[in-house]
Length: 120
Image (cartoon, rainbow, N blue to C red; front, side):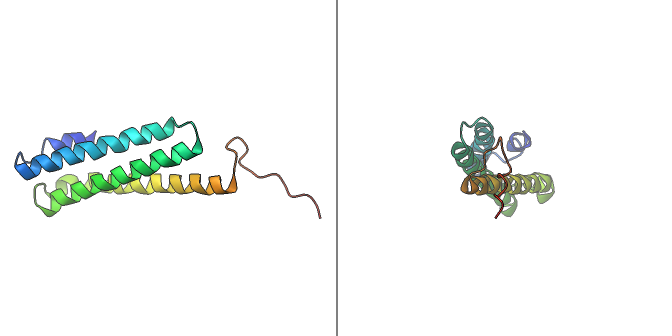
């Protein structure tokens, strides 16, 4: 939601409109793919949707950084938003990595602990 509020602060120049469009697109796609991951029907679909969300969040961070680098927005205005984007990226990356690890170990989410080994 905060990204959409930021869109109104971006200058209405040709460059600004490009950034507005790109930032609106990738930030909304990141949120939509995260939601889709939460509703996924399989672990593979969950991992796939999280991967897309990660790409979109990373792209959102890129556009916010570009706003700063081109001086279209003051750093103070977006520092918290940029930090939040980096934190979300780290959280979703950890979640995806855990899901991948669990897939490799074939962990059943209903039975998270493997059965005990038989005595030797």
